[in-house]
Length: 394
Image (cartoon, rainbow, N blue to C red; front, side, top):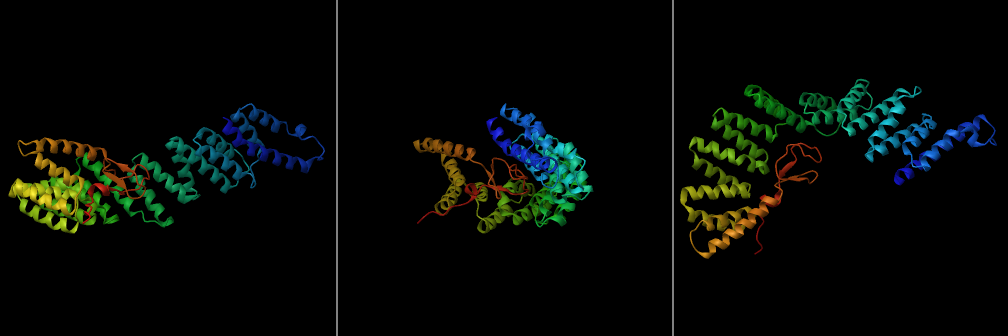
């Protein structure tokens, strides 16, 4: 409360100065200020009695809205909003809108700030109504559209997101193709939930028309092909997605393996992974190769293959797999020790975040297409420390 009192003191001083200035134009300067401005001292009394809500009402009434004081009202409201005291911010901005002397631009600014208050308070319907009114009047168009987009994303209204994004693109320098592609992917996911695969396919093609490098859309097309048992087409899309974003490959791997196995093409999978591992080394590809070597050449060959990989470029996952293979050997005290080390590494891997946002650094154990922290689309990738192979010092 004391912090709020100190916050209001400058407002009280400004109110008194402006009120005295107006009175000085009309009456003799020797006239006692308190006689002509009892409301000012009433506001001070509320302030000293730690009644900030009443003080706000008094001082805002004293501050007549004109070109000199509009920014003071707006700044005070914004300050309350940033402090999380949204109700007070709303009261101040509503008081502004009620003033009849506002110009069109001033009223637009007050409405925009009130919309920001509603948005912060989670009153999306009220905020949307104000922002749509400002959009129609072409006032504060860029920030208004950004806020509308934020509301529609919260409400998962992807059609409206697309419309707003299209209107916003000419006003901003950054490309919005990536987020539009993800909006189409969200709509395609909804179509899949309705078992409307044809509509999902149409929407995914629109996503790729918006952003041909949308890995998510290519992956979803691969999944649709696999669902209709067109595994060759699915494999083509899985590989295309991996080429677009090599960091995304671990997310595709399980489905890619399944598609190859459905075709009975394990040798083709092994050849592809060997080639890919040379181009883009990562622990996930390595572990699949180990399993394929184990299936086709035996456990000893798998251990030898993995031991050589760990010698040149170790990773936690590879070490865990090697311990797993050794622990399967029956008897011997070494197996018991290896099993204990294996469990410790497994716990370490489980506790560490699997994904990290390339823009803000947010970490998560599961993949989010939209970063929960910075709200950017497609920015979460596999954590580099878990996938990278670090060379050993010689």
